[in-house]
Length: 482
Image 1: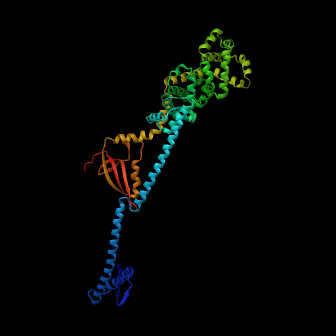
Image 2: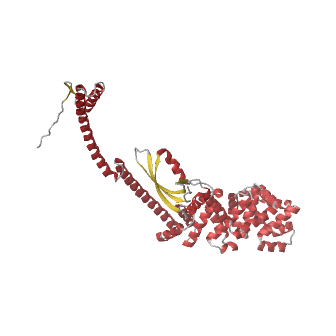
């Protein structure tokens, strides 16, 4: 086994040994230099000091050379690591990337599991196979909507629970739900689609203008009527839905359309009458009308046969004939026995009949608006466009016109070094700005050429006071002549 050799250096100045350390040698050399400055150049004393200074400087140079070799070795090692990152930072980055990948896999696994649960729920309530639900979701992906697939599947679940079956009707329901929940959820709440779709399913059983429509169009027809009445008056959409729901059964029996019932609801709400009391009162009023035609024919100023025939063909017109007569000639006293029979609901009935007879013109206008909204079929779509575009506006108004404008310009890529304090100003160049594309202020001048930034990659090194960047730009102009 080889033995190590210990090297020692003895340094003497003016017969005195100097401590063998770089600090002591440097101090001794500096002392000799200071003394030499006071000597006559070329004297024996000056030359002797110069020789000692040279000797001490040699020791210091040897030390520095050793340090330089050590530094070079470390730099080589550091360079090898730099392919992975910046020395230890590279290792940390690898671990960070690995952790991120693991987290992503875990998150993806959870997402798959969550979606699998959603599929299972839809399968259970719609009687569909997994393949059929997956196929339905492929259709969801084609929809122009900001709703997540989880939300769209939730609508499919609602559809299944209220009895909707088959891909076509389920897809139609979800498409309608997307529109209804965007345009009416603010006024009808989170169960807007359930309320509207139930009305559609109730009235479409007997109502000719709804019966032949697809489920999607039936739902949108109801939504159109509610939306338009809410747009042209102070009537509350939730009130109208509640009123129509309470009167739905009677409406079917009496063959009064959903649109006409919503017209009554609109006027009653505008006059601040209770939906519950008014719906109950109107329902009982219709029953009396149909069971005692002679009494109401007299009030309406019509022959019994004529009024009975009107009841058979158009109950809504018969109601309005009675209301018109009551409003013009009076006659509420003739209805006193009926009000007495209604007991606790008598006050609600008086209020309802008095209001509708006094506001018959408003009732007819509301029914006209409601019927026209169903025929036109645009109210929900228009509301959806307004609401949906308000969310899309950032991209549509700011980013898309900007990208369209720069698409025709020549792309240029350049390298830059930015001081740290200026980097945020550079980043601000990429923020969306209001106004037309031509009015953008994000451009920069490089060699007298106007450029618009498109994309930036940057590299930051710890300990450095600058950031290296590569920026892709659109060349908007040619160099100005000198």
